[in-house]
Length: 289
Image (cartoon, rainbow, N blue to C red; front, side, top):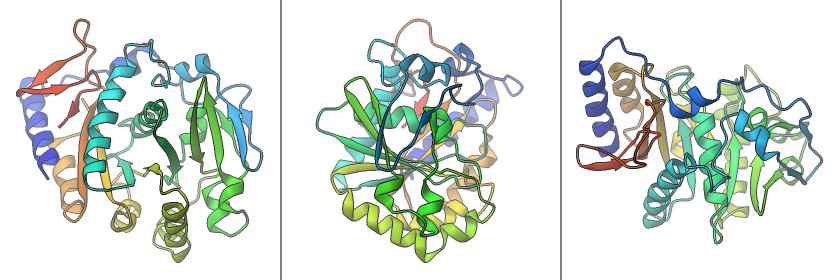
């Protein structure tokens, strides 16, 4: 649990230095457009491939697909750190979560997935399991009719609900969630979910699978599914996440490996790409090792 411990230390420093200061993330401050999708969202067809609009992605704070954008390097660093840890342990399934809502976990999940997709010998599948508040489709600009819920209900096959999202020469495979449901807790603990996760693990063995999960402290959804995934990353936010939040999350991660704690919405860094917190390198995202 070293990553949680270091995050707690970092939060202690932040709270001690400026208890009332509200820091704004470099990505958030540069683009305040709401995540309401494109006015002409790409339509989903069964087993389809959709070409995403790079300009519209940027309005939704998705920039990791663009190597010429200096901000993408933060996600590349996070990608390399996470993949090295996962490879070392032969892990395939990564859960992305946060203590509470508003920390930017979906934005980080999408950008991380696109950063992985840029690597020539890597394949990535992004699954939206935030069933009460799904945001992956909106963030990518996909108008989907099939998704996780229809697969869980047996109305769609997994192959029909998948969407290949292409940006330039790179492809991100996604399993969106097409509709919100108040039955999220029941679905997370269901046999249907276990079967879906098993199917994904078997059929996408060569893929890194990223699950965009709900916040830990809002319901029992994450607690229900943690035993079925290999590892998790916790996205915290400057000015929002408290030390008490991280400590409370830590109680639920005792049996789960935390590969990284991401300190999101840190103030912009106008000079170097690299920072140092306590001798450890960190990116503009403020990812804490």
